[in-house]
Amino acid sequence: MSLNLPVYLDNNATTPMDPKVLEEMLPYFSEKFGNAASRTHAYGWEAEEAVDIARENIAGLIGSHPQEIVFTSGATEAVNLAIKGAWQNDPEKKGHIITIITEHKAVLDTCKHIENVGGSVTYLPVQSNGLVDLKVLEKAITPDTFLIAVMYANNETGVIQPIKEISDIAKARGILFFTDATQAVGKIPVNVQTDGIDMLAFSAHKLYGPKGVGALYVRKKNPTVTLTAQIDGGGHERNMRSGTLNVPGIVAFGKACEICAEKITSENERLGVLRDSFEKQILELDNIDINAGHAPRLPHATNISFHDIDGEKMIFEAGSDIAFSRSSACTSATLEPSYVLKAMGLSNELIHNTFRFSFGRFSTEQQVDHAVKVISKIVKEHRSERNYGHHKVI
Image 1 (cartoon, rainbow, N blue to C red):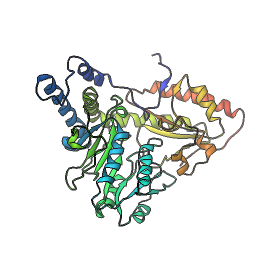
Image 2: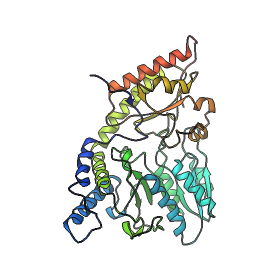
Image 3: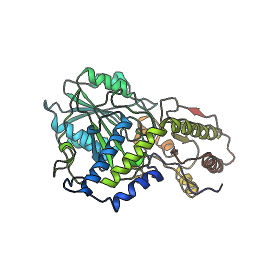
Image 4: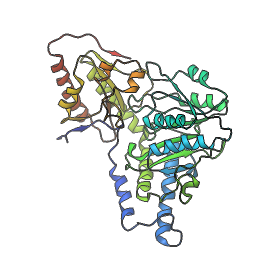
C-alpha cells in the first residue's frame, strides 16, 4: 500500500476529522440551517433538537448531566470562562489560585491576567517526570485559596496528572477544582463524577471533530458552581456564554464524542502498541531519552530527546516525510525552548533536540515503520561515524 506523505504524527496538535463526523455535520450548513434559538418554527426546533442530542453525547463521554455542558468556541475560551468566571464570582473574594508551571498557555496566560487585576496565583513546580508533588500542592494551599487548576494530561509529554488525588485534596478544603482536559477527553476514560471535577475544558478538534467548537463542564450540584459570563448578549448557555450556537460544529462535536465513547478501549490498546513499537525502534539508535517514560502517559503520545543531533536540521530534513512537532502547536511559532521540558530539568540544548510524536485513529503500522526509517537515517547521518553511549528512559 502506498503512503500519503508526509505521514501525520502530530495528533496532539489537532486530529483529522472522522468522515462519519463530517457526514453528520454537513446537512446543518444547508437544508438544516436553522438557529437553535428560533423557537417559533420547524427550522429552529430541528436545530435545537440536534444540539440537545449532541449535548447528551458530549456529556455522556465525560459522565456529566447534559445541562452541565456549556458550549464555547474552543478549549481556550472554556479555560478563560472557568478561571475568570470563577474568580469574578467568588463570593468570599479569596482570590488565590493554585496551578502548575507546565499548564497550557491558555491557563497560564489567564492566570497572569488574574494577577494583573488583583488576584494571586501560585505556580507549582513539577518533578523530573512531569508530575506535580501532592505534598507541595497541599503546602501551597492558604485560607484564601478558592481554585486549583491542574491539567489532566500534558500536551507536550502526555503525562497524566493524579487528578483524583488532587480533587480529594481540593474537596477536603472546600476548594473548586478545574482541569484542562483537552488532551485527555476522547483519548482515555474521563469521568467528572468519579474524578471529582468541578469544571473541565475540552475541544472537538482534539477528538476527530472540527475546529472552532469546544465545551466547559460546570458542575450543577455538590457543589453548585456559578460563573460570571465573559461574553454577554442574550443569556444563552445558562447565562454563562451568550451567542448564537454553532449548530454544525456542535452536531459534529456530539458525533465525535459518540464515536470516541464506542472506540476508546480498543483505540487505547491499538495506539499504545503503535507508540510502544515506535519508541522501541527509536531507542535502538542509542543516546535517546523518552521523557517521562515511567510516568502515567497518554497511550498515543511520546516525547523524545535525541542527543548529538541538529534539531533544526532534523525538522527540515524530515519535513517532507513526517509531520511532527517540537512542542505544542500554540507555542511552536516562537524559538523559545519548551517551558514544559525546562520545568522537568532538560537543558536548552537538549530541548532543541526534543520532539513530540502523537499517533491517532488513522495512524498505521506502515506509517510508524516509515517514520522510524526516516528518523533513523537522519540521526545516523547527524552523528556521522561517532560512537555514542546508551539510551535511557527517564
